[in-house]
Length: 154
Image (cartoon, rainbow, N blue to C red):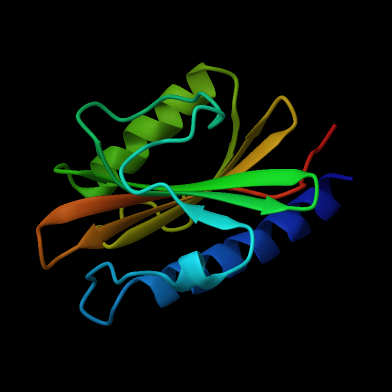
């Protein structure tokens, strides 16, 4: 069962990385995603949906973009935050806080990287992917958090 979860997590991380690559231009600048064109996706701008699950949020982060995704009876969310601290510092904080609050954390995928880190987290049936990425153009760190539609584990 654990190997199945690890395989599923790796596939999901791959999909999130590809999705993030499509959302970020070659120079690291966030580009307007095509999500608004997809059925079931609502652009919430700088607001976070009230149904977005609670988990620790890095001190001082600001919401850059937020989306609610609906597919059948399943609902998911994508939120993009920005922080002023380095990727590695933000990643270490998230791992410490999430583990301390009982979340299962897989990753980071490249400890110590100053460019990008990927985490998969789960707790109480919820699964999230984190991509923490350097936006070199603005000297900011972007934090992409995506809930996995319809994925629940026991």
